[in-house]
Image (cartoon, rainbow, N blue to C red; front, side):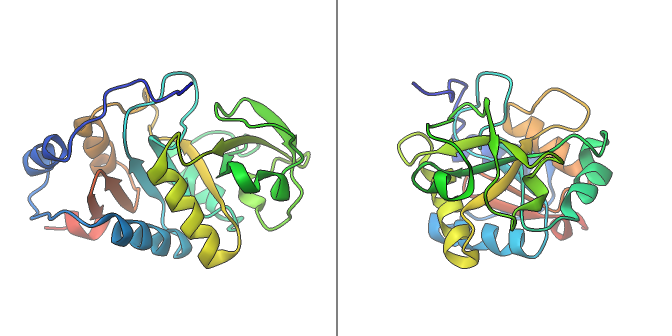
Amino acid sequence: RSPYLGKNFSNEEIFNELSKQCKVNFSRIKEDDLIKRTVHYLIEGKLIGWFQGGAEFGPRALGARSFLADPRNDQIRDQINQKIKKRELFRPFAPSTLKETSKEFFDIDQDSPYMNIVSQVKNKKIPAVTHIDGTARVHTISKDMHARYHKLISHFGEVTGIPVILNTSFNVQEPIVYSPKDAILTFINSKVDVLVIGDYIITREDLNY
């Protein structure tokens, strides 16, 4: 009943890898502050590397190993393609939304926890996740499936009125990241703005030592 079948790395394992790869002092952040800061970065137009919980099993990034962005920003698609994906502009990015509010934004009458259902988009305020034909490949998320990702989308919705986040796989012309080392090295070698990994946040500015 869950796609998150991969290993769930501890904060100690994450910290140890951060210490090896980055010459920065990091301290753990309480979850509420971590969520608020991440939402702030999203609204600023930042591209987020999001590494949380056990890795997904299957062909889609489902909020455990994902790049995240603000779906209201129609220009963000170009930025994502320039910074990481380098793929055809006609290929859309997908939305993650709350299970309980999905029908307000998409013409869908069932849950889509594996991001495998395409539906019409009802709300014109999320152009970055809307395909040229007015559809989106919807990912619905419930609290019991991934509590932290659900909390992030919920808070983004509280601040913006849009409980939807652009979600694409955490990789740059490579297999999707799996371990903290994968995520940190992909972040360092890409043009991604922020890495949110476990209870830690690293910005691009933190790497300019």
